Image (cartoon, rainbow, N blue to C red):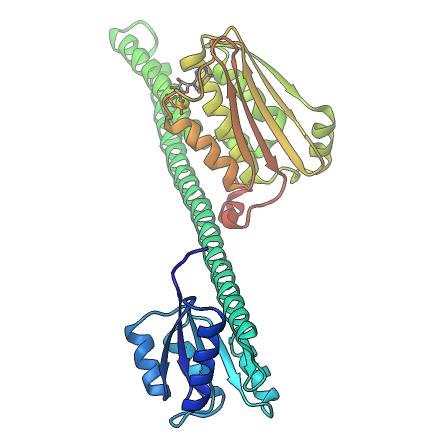
Length: 378
Ligand SMILES: Nc1ncnc2c1ncn2[C@@H]1O[C@H](COP(=O)(O)OP(=O)(O)O)[C@@H](O)[C@H]1O
Ligand SMILES: [Mg+2]
C-alpha cells in the first residue's frame, strides 16, 4: 500500500461534528488521512474543480443545498471520486436513495467511531476503483466489437467490389466472344487459301487467348463463380488451378459432403469465401516458398457446426518467429476471424508447413451484405 496519506474532502456545515471527526481520525490513525474541510456545497464544488482528493465525506444537509441534490451535484462535479454520505439517524430512506444515486457508502452521524469511518472510506475507494475498472473494460470491449464489425464490413465491401469487377469483366468477355465469332464466320466465308484469311486466323487465335487465358482467368481470380456450387467442384477447381505447380491431394470428409448435399445452405457463402481465400493464399505460399513435392488439403468437421481446413505441405518449412510477416498470413487470419473463426500456421525449418483454419457454419452478422449476391451467379 502507498504510504501517501489519503486526501479527504469533508463537507460538513456543523463545525463541532467536523472537528470531532477530524480529531478522532487523527488520534486513532495518525498521519493516514489528510482532511480538507469546507462548510458549503459551493465551496466543495469549487474545491473539486481545482483540487483532487481520494474520497468525499458528504453531509447532505448544507446551508446552500439539501437532500439528494447535494450528492447529485457533487457526483456531477467529480464523477470518479468516491463519496461517503453522512446522514442523521432519522434519514435511513435518504441514505438508501444516496446509495442508488451512486454514493459508495453512508454513515449515520453519532454512530461512527474512527475505525468504522476509516474502513468505510477505504472500502469506498476500493469499490469505486473496481467500478471504474469495469467501466473501462466495458468501453474497451465495446471498442473491440466495433473494430471487429468494421473489419467484417471492410472485407465484405472488398468482396463486393471484386464481384462487381468480375461481372463487368464477364461482360467484356462476352463482347469479345461475339466479335471473335463474327470474325470466324467471315473467315469461313473467305475460304482458307488467301494470305488475309491466314492472318485473320492468327487474330482469332490471339483473341481466344486473351478471352480465355486473360479476361476469364482474371474474372475467376477476382470472384470464382464456382464458389456457389458446393465443396466438391470448389476444391476440384483448386486442383486445376495449382496442379501445374505442385501435386495436390484433396481429402474431403464424406459425412460433411453428405450433409452438404442434403442442405445446400450448410456452409454460408461468407464461410465458403473465407475458406477459398485462405486456401488460395496457403497454396500460393506453398508454390512460392515451400519447395514442396506434395500438398494435402483436408476439410472435415472438428465438431458439430464447425468446419476445418488444413493445408499441409512437405516442403522446407520456416521459422515462425523470424519469418517476415507478409500480407498473406494476416489476410488468412482476417478472413477467418471475420467469420468468427480462427486461422493458425504451424511450421518448423525442415518440417513442412500446415495452415489450419477452423470456421463456424453460421452467418457472421457483419457480412450479411454478401448474402444478397449468394444466388444469381453463374
Ligand atoms: N508454406 C510455406 N513454406 C515455407 N515458407 C512459408 C510458407 N508459407 C509462408 N512462408 C514464409 O512466411 C512468409 C510470410 O508469408 P506471407 O505472409 O504469405 O507473405 P509473402 O508470401 O508475401 O512473403 C513468407 O515470406 C515465407 O518466408
Ligand atoms: Mg503469401
